Image (spheres, rainbow, N blue to C red):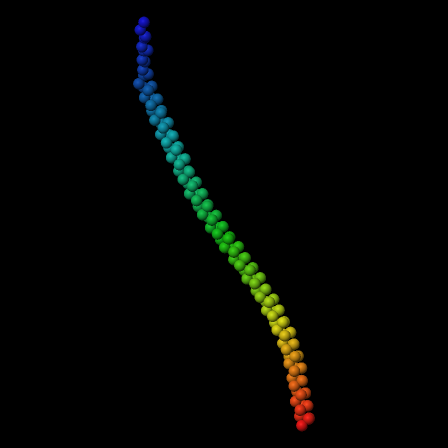
Length: 122
């Protein structure tokens, strides 16, 4: 027995043309939607880049401000320490000066007494 070949039946041309037109329309519509999505994505990327640049600039400015404040505080602390060191040095110099004057006064008085004694003895 021979196998029967199936009978090929064709859809009416108008129906096939309609389906083709529908498929082409769907493809074009999807392509337009893809272009819109890509456009929005590109805009989002630009916005994110601008936002990142703005945040980076703000962070840099903040870091510079904080660094300037820290430097100012360090300078003030150094000035205070220097003033305290100077005051301490001045106080020690006064004490040494007084001690030196006292010591030299005693030496001068002793020498003066020796000279007076020599003058009296002659």
